[in-house]
Amino acid sequence: MAAARILVITNRKGGTGKTSMAVNLASEYAARGRRVLLIDLDSQSHCAVGLGVPPVRGAASAQSFLAGQNSLRDALRLQVLPGLDLVPADPLFNHNGSGDTSTALGVALQAEGLLEDYDLVLLDTPPSLDGLLLNALCAADRVLVPFVPHFLSGEGVRQLARVIFRVASRGMNDKLKVLGFVPVMLDTRIGLHREVCEGLGHQFGRNRLLPGIRNDIRVAEAFGRGKPVRQHAAHCRAAQDFAVVADAIDRMWVSV
Ligand SMILES: Nc1ncnc2c1ncn2[C@@H]1O[C@H](COP(=O)(O)OP(=O)(O)OP(=O)(O)O)[C@@H](O)[C@H]1O
Ligand SMILES: [Mg+2]
Image (cartoon, helix red, strand yellow):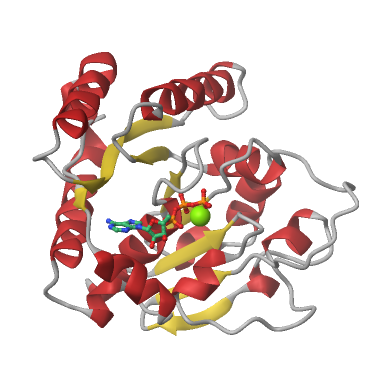
């Protein structure tokens, strides 16, 4: 059986829809019958919130794994939705800085046999450049960058591109490639949104610009109810857009 694909969802800027993308793509692919593992590498721990997974005090988490306290498998919350397992983050985890290397996650995914158990591993990441983000970049095959098409988003994406280039070029992960950029909270009637998207397409290649996720209050509502948007409002425009982005990722995976 083929090993899982590993997709990291990241942007150095905060609030660009990373967690919404991670939770909604994870549930979209799981609903299509894929075996999906979502790993939350942001200590804000929002993936569990968005999936309605209650916190368990002191339970194994992505951070306790990186601190060497447990295996990655020990941190699994199984079948949070049919076909979807979650490694949550722990917002209360007190990290003393010991035991973390940038390769621990990639090594464990392989060594613990997790790549055989899943078709897709999705990694949600923090906006800060910390050990959790580095682990994600060192473990992943492809990078997906959600961005809000505003004035400063080009700069955030360029900063991220430099980090990715460093990881890929310093032998930390030579399989890492940028899959593409997804405009989020998109309204194509707004001139600035069109301009920012065109600018990024121009800089990184139009073929790397994925279809966008339109601005839709249902995304925030669904999150507040601990559900992916396809469960909260199956026919809303964001649910449609996440399905279109999932199709585009499948197409682009082999072509980039
Ligand atoms: N398509 C959308 N339409 C409307 N609101 C959205 C959309 N996508 C995300 N949001 C909202 O934008 C806010 C930020 O989204 P999210 O938490 O996914 O971003 P993030 O990049 O993970 O943030 P952080 O950097 O803090 O981790 C949330 O309130 C979310 O509900
Ligand atoms: Mg987030």
